Amino acid sequence: MNISKNLILTALVFPVVALGIFTAFKKYKFEVGTKIVLPISGYDPRDLLSGHYLVYTVEYGATPDCDMRSKPEPSYYCIDSKRFYRFKPSTCSAIIRGRCQYNRFLADIEKFYIPEDKASELDKLVRGKEAAIEISVQYDGTAQVRDLLINGKSWRELY
Amino acid sequence: MANIEKKLIEWTQKGLISEQQKTDIETYESENEGHSWVYYGFLILGVSVIGLGLISIIAANWMYIPDSAKLLVDFLLLGTAAWVGNYYYSKNKRMHFEVALTGLGLLILGSIGLISQIYHTGGELYQALFLWSFLTLGLFLVSRRAAFPLLWFSLFTVALTNLIYQFSKIGFLTINNYGHYTVIAPVIGVLAIICAYFKALRPHAISGFLLAIISILSYFVVGEVVQGGFAKNVGHVKYLIPSYIATAVFVSLAWRLKSIDRRQKLALMLISLFYFIPIHLGGLELFYPVATILTLSSLAVLFVSLEYKKLFQFFLFLVGVRFLVIYFQVFGSLLETGIGLLLTGVVIIAFVYLWNKFRKPIYEWTQKKLQGN
Image (cartoon, rainbow over all chains, first blue to last red):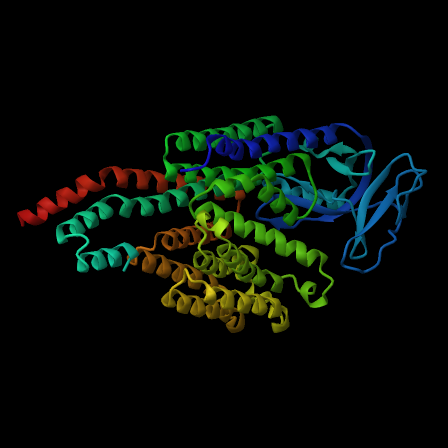
């Protein structure tokens, strides 16, 4: 073999280190940021690569300014005024940055991973009871799901 | 007949080597290299099965294990795979290095899934695959065998085609969810052949033909992973227009490749035709897995008999992947599937190890018995 050992080492170590940094970044976003609770309603598809997860509609309390276009367009939700904007509003203390697609506002918080054996049970609970998600919102508007709440309590407390 | 045999006959006829030397070379090749690439093929299959088993177990999202423990085990596995790869490279064991490389690549894919689960990241599949492609680009570049570059190419193309469809402004490309998957295989073929034209990329062992034929057949695998034979869901033939165009470009480019002989070109044409047949025939759902496994197995047997190493390895790998899909379809739970795959992978590797260790004694024993009779 004619590849230098340093190059091999870099190729092998880089993905592990990069994944470590990626995990730390996700953990940081998970812990830091404005915590907000938003109600949801949903359903439960299956994805072989992802195991079971709930996919739901987030109830923002306002109708997004979206049309039926399939191509994503940037959109913003102001938490203070509970309104959607096509351009980043300057007067909001916290915003959720997302996109308009197929008449929906999507902010990559529409999926919550759950254990496979609890999937159908949680699905029923989400459908039948008052369900919500707790999210962490960063200053730049990116949001990340922290927990699934059933009647105000974390889903883990049910088991 | 393999190239080495043709060369040996030619050299003997021209008096470059004697009959005895020809026989000695043939004996050496059959005892050493001859079995090692078959051995490598099964080893890659075993590691891939174990890797997919781990992904399934990760996907099962076991709530009883704390997130920190899951991440710790995951990073320990990643570190071990990287260390094993480096160890085998320093020992100049190419084959084992490549196996470790493939294992690390699959583990990285599983790790992205695990991090997504723990931190509930949103986003699309193509974004995760682009991240994987970026993280494993180095592994792709240092690989000198076919298995990992093929895996990398396939997943990168899935990401690329999904991205194109996501942002495409052309209506007919986006209307149908299933039709666009058929374009993946020929696009991989086109990319592979473009690579084959660049001399710099040739040492990566991705001969145009190998990648092209693999990509065409990966259609079956990708298709069945998505929908257990998605051809029936294509809907209308117009959704296949991009696939037909990509296939035509692919075949015409492949036809110009000098590294492919006439026989391979003909095989390529036939398989390209076969690629579209199930879509137009429709019929029983069972047709797809049966047809795929039979085709792939026949090709693996054909190529091992012709001593085409890489083709044999690739088709063996595809047979394995197709069986994995059956696992997913048969078992209800991802945890059961994962454990089943993990055990299958361990059994394959154990069998390969034992076979490699006891092959010669068994052969000598049977020879003695035969001579005794």
